[in-house]
Image 1: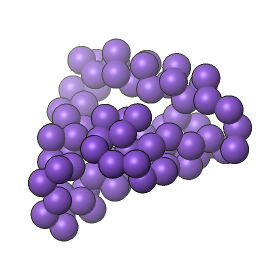
Image 2: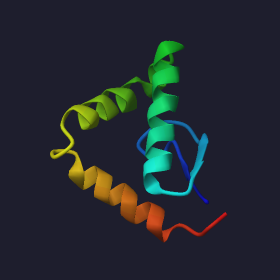
Image 3: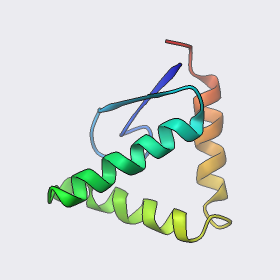
Length: 78
């Protein structure tokens, strides 16, 4: 299990997302950004907009995805 924060994933806060894989924390970040958008949190909106773009154009977002995968791999286990 490893931990990445919202900020490490491109968001504005330090909420910790934990997962066994990089996909786990990316999906947790997506859910967090959706919840913040629904709550009207303007600080998270730019990150949410970027996440929407990545889901719509996965090939174009591959660089970000690979960066997050590499960052996750370098993290110590919790």
